Amino acid sequence: MTDQVKIMILGGVREQGKDMFAVQVNDEIYILDAGLKYPDSTLFGIDLVIPDLDFFEQYSDQVVGIFLTHGHADSIGALPYILRKYDIPVFGSQLTIELAKIKVKRENKRLKTSLFHVIDADTEIEFKNSNISFFHTTHSIPDSLGIDVHTNAGEIVYTGDFKFDLSAAPNYRTDLDRLAEISQKNVLALLSDSSNAEATLPNVSEQEIGEYVTNVFRNAKGRVIVAAKASNLIRIQEVLNAAYRTGKKVLLTGRDVAKIVRTAMGLGYLKVPKELLIRVKDLKEIPENKVVILETGQMGEPLNSLQNMAKKRHTMITIHPGDLVFIATTPSHAVETTVAQTSDMVYQAGGRVIELGRAKSTSGHATGTDLQMLISILKPKFVIPVIGEYRLLEAHKDLAVKAGISQENVIVTRNGDCLNYDFKQAKFYLTDPVPGDDIMIDGSGIGDVGNIVLRDREVLSDDGIFIAVVTIDRRKKKIIAQPQVTSRGFVYIKANRQLMQDSVELIKSTIKNNFEHKKFDWTEIKQDVRNDLEKFLYKKTNRRPVVLPVVMEVNQNRHRALQKRNGKNNDYHSVDVNKSGKRIIKKD
Image (cartoon, rainbow, N blue to C red):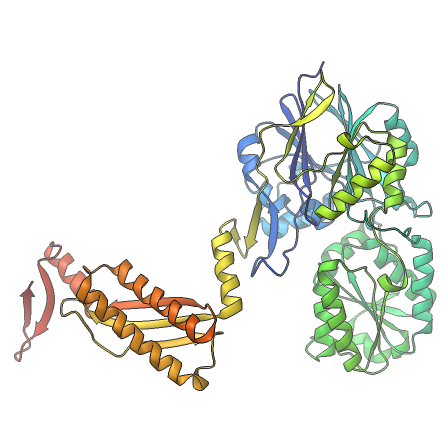
């Protein structure tokens, strides 16, 4: 009998993205997905967020593989940072592995191709303590897979991102027969996608969406400019099909086209009719009503490109009267405001906007009905809602209870939770947590930006910075020159001259008081200036800028050089030059 079964939540709950979970069977750990999330507006300057890599520091000798469900960033985006240090085998479908290689190569100069292994829905991998098998799922990218981890306590099933669509093309279709087969093995726990758990309306079939896109293109009087995520390959295929059916040509633009879209084309996952694609130089020769411009990218990149087109700042395309902008992906709550702002800019430029998400109920994620259908097929003993913000996990829990799962067997977790299965009592219980914090990526820095830095950035964004520079002579206990003050993002200096002058007088008073009543200390004198300025500026403006005092000492560099030259610490304090040009060294 298996001695130990654990489920570890490393990311992807109470948040959108950053999916990473682990199943431990005895001394082997199987990682399910390794994703990232894009920062919201509170993470100032942060590029990406990934799961806590300390987990691999502690458990890398037990990790036998990383198993990927699909090729979106929320599933594969953390791989480059994991594989920089740890040589862990990675398993996924052909397209998923190719996209993962692109991700890893973008961040790592050397790509260890030997770590990547292509599997499919018919693959079963035997390890010492468990077998890992897979099943087809429906998502917005082809060859998405769910994962089944076999244990002696029962199957642990992880769906990844999925939905049900019985009309989906073969590369996108969920294998219901395989799900029924898994259900016969006694499903212990189901880790299931919660991203769309609040949806009450069923998702429109992709076949119907394809027909809708075709009608939009057919009725367009001028150019059609489509904004879509590069990784939403099912939508890109529908755009290409609609253009072909309506006799239009397609220009591909966007940062990720050459990598993601063309990779999918090369593998045959995107079907592109001959002579459908054109280049920028061909635009002049083709009537505008025969042109589709497909702008792709990650997250909000297509929307940013649309804004640049509307403001005439795009390198290739400018929106003008008669253009139709078709936003082809359903935006998340985080970018709804950006979509509205973008639409307004397009209308001001003379174009008009159609949003697919407003016209059709569409998502790449399971609705509440889909989730209950999955539960009825698999009949799991435990349901663990994953992949979604807290309200979505709770909505998923309510759905599971209504589908017949007892309330105590639906476990809503948080990142870092470790669920240990008790064979005797036949239930999961929380044990010592595992690393589950966020690791923030800022430029080339990994994890070097913490809460203190973010707090400073937030303050800077709210009330700006106030800089005070003063030069002193600590021996004579006097200020050598008038303090200089300036600010950025705090007040308009020309309109607040009195405030700046009063600040200068306050600095002089603070330093004088420090000289008279305290023993000289660099840290203390700066802190006094900072504290007094913060109180003064708040009293005058009700704002709290970041106050940065810069206190310098006259001739201090020459002092240090002289001390070093003479091998002494504090025997000398200044150097003068007499009338004949000779140096005179004065002792303290």
